[in-house]
Image (cartoon, rainbow, N blue to C red; front, side):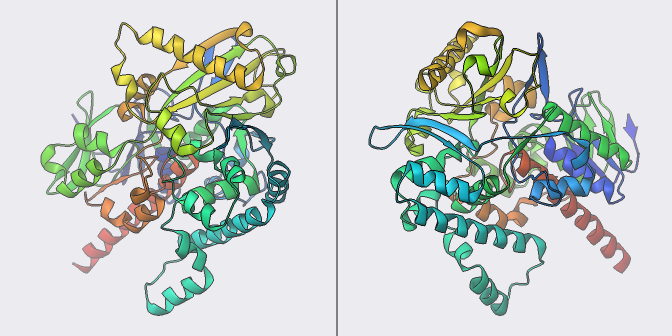
Amino acid sequence: MTHKNNYDIIVIGAGCGGLSAAVCAAKEGKKVLLLERHNTPGGFSTSFVRGRFEFETSLHELCRFSTEAGLGELRQIFDFMGISDKIKWSPVPDAFRLLSKSYDGSPIDVTMPFGQDNFINTMEEYVPGSKESMTRLFMLGDEIEAAIEYFASNEIKISLKEIHNIMKKYGNFVKTAPYSVNEVLDALKVPQKAREIFNAYWWYLGIDCDRLSFTHYICMVNSYIRLGSVIPTYRSHEMSMALAGALEDYNGEIRYNSHVSRILFKDGEACGVVMKNGEKIDCNHIICNCSPTTVYSKMMKKSDVPLSAVKRTNARTFGARGACVYLGLNRSPEELGIKDYSFFITDTADSASQFALMKTIDTNSSQATVCLNIANPDCSPEGTTIMCMTTLYTDNCWADVTPEGYFDEKDMLAARLIAKFEEATGITIHKYIEEIEVATPVTFARYTNTPQGCIYGYLGDDWDSVVPRFMTEALDCDTKGLRFCGGWGTQLSGINSAVASGRNAAYATLGDIENERSAQNEA
């Protein structure tokens, strides 16, 4: 059965990247069809209910978003889409609390605030003598952010004069681009303990600071500290629904329970999709909000996949796999003694050592834990608390768990993370559990169709970090009519990055359409 609906663009997958791509294309007047295999939009950005608690599935906080209009990349995108004011936002009060062990074995227990000056001054209290290097670090962050904004907002013509201008105005961006976080912190002579605290946020990029791109990390952390962060008051599902609503406002179409089984090609160019129910929909431009590994191996004929795409995808490594323990507690945060929103609890503050411990289930009890009530006091019934404990695995260790032992392993994971939290904070929570749910990489693989339950796309290793990906972005478009968006793309993982990648994929596709039209007119 064939439907010739004359769609300009089909978007596969209603995660944040796909929603963003669809909204931007529809806002520019294109006829857009968004196909989603689930019955609700959002992908990881959703919520679920157990008993009297509504849990946030994955979002800990959104950075690059200010409650003041126009500030922050994510805010600018949402303003452009017309949805910023359609979502109720709750500000996160502090940056993070880190509980770990320093390089010399001494304990670390620090709570870091928002605001560059506040952050620097608080660091000086914890690590006397760090103020000068931390000040230089944030000045460097401001310069690199300005360079990124310049590159994003200008069509740069590569010439000797332009290269000279870039070197003169943004020389430190060029100098630091090839280096890791720790290499730059070494050059700035940041004290070891200050470095351990500053590096705590590596968790949300899923790769240790010996290999993590400094450019990527400083852009995220600098804007995070400078602007603060927020969460949607009614969970990230509110954000996903606002994006879906915007698509319909711009006359786009979204179909739920619509599973795309194959992308069709003719003479090397995309020409449509086939649904799981056998329906065929014609279209010459497709944006896919899912893993290229999945698309090339399961959704395309082998003969339609360019060898270059196979080589590029196979060269990459899957990023961190995720597991979460969701807790509904029958005591308030005040009764429990919880005062912080965000906790990083690790065995060691050395990110490379912690990354190695995350290779197996038994050696990993590290966690990024949030207490939703601290930012949003009304998120659960009075006298209760919602918590989410997230841990990462840097290898596919859950593949070794047998079906017979799966539920026992989930129980042990929950017990391990809860015990680690109680040991680190001195706060008892296990006695007050009313609801508990555990999601493993197996859960995320089943729900989101991500390979091995990866929540961070491809690993942003030193050779495949954000700067090299931007430099080689054109090479990713070797299948005519097919583009990708979401956490597997140029800007790597995270909701902010997914939204931005969706916008970029939409405008790149609009450019493809315009170029085709111009070529036809010339012919």
